[in-house]
Length: 406
Image 1 (cartoon, rainbow, N blue to C red):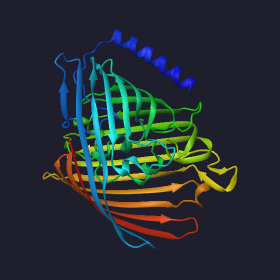
Image 2: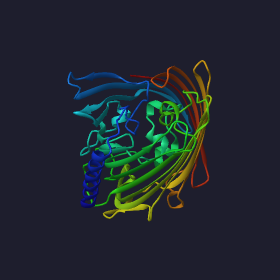
Image 3: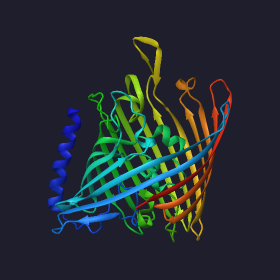
Image 4: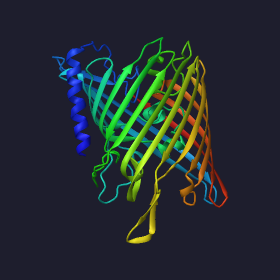
């Protein structure tokens, strides 16, 4: 951790010095960053002090769903649940350059099962932003890392009811640390952003163990035809109906040193630490209601399987492998949307005896009542699992979901 703090204070010192020499006005104080659940229309309920030295914005959102599930060798069943229930507070203190984001989660699927000795995962985001000008952002605290695009997008801004199987296995998710972003966005000409992070590597609300290994993350996003309308790179589907083609290409890499969980910031504990490397490529194209997304994700490490030294029959393994996602949609003028998605996932040869390769096909229909903040969704998804022994298992589910928020 010594190296983490030395990097943090060095960059913080630089950022303060930079802001004193470059005082560009900040005309739009919205956080167009990983911590933002919504985009420009969603302002929430705001409170500003009489002296304008303090601002508090309150937002909430919930997802209620019912799912009918058919799995081979199991009885058919249905599940009804509050999938997500979030409360978000954000604003600034003293000066609009000093911002904060707090996001809490309360649904069982968000908090997860509580085990003895574990922390309750209510806190999702608790992060301080220092924004010296329109280009630079410096973050300190717990929030999403600059990883794959679908993870950076809020779960409230998805076209289907959940993210892909590859995101579930290969994402790098939230972590505690320091991040620095350089944003250079223009409406009609070449734009780009560069994002970096130094974080603990163990994920959100982790206090069970500590080590001197940190996770190093870097990402670059390129928009050759200019920035998307209404921050369209932060939500799925072309709800803004771009009148000229908008394209984003991005690549990210993370090295998580001495990771102690099966998926880096997520998963069960390994019996021995491993250094994980994650790779992400994303593409988004939007034009006149059409939207196409594609993503490549990969994780690798050495000696994936770890064993309990006190009982060799107990083991756990790094979930390593690669996968691709493809997603195509069209928004009709009556605000109905059709979405199709295909994903494939191939696990590393070393862990094939323990977990299957996957394919997933999804078809969704969405009715946007108030864009992503208030929508009805229906989704049919078919899974194909191919096991090491050669047998194939086919499963499917049908889901209805209501999303509402401010």
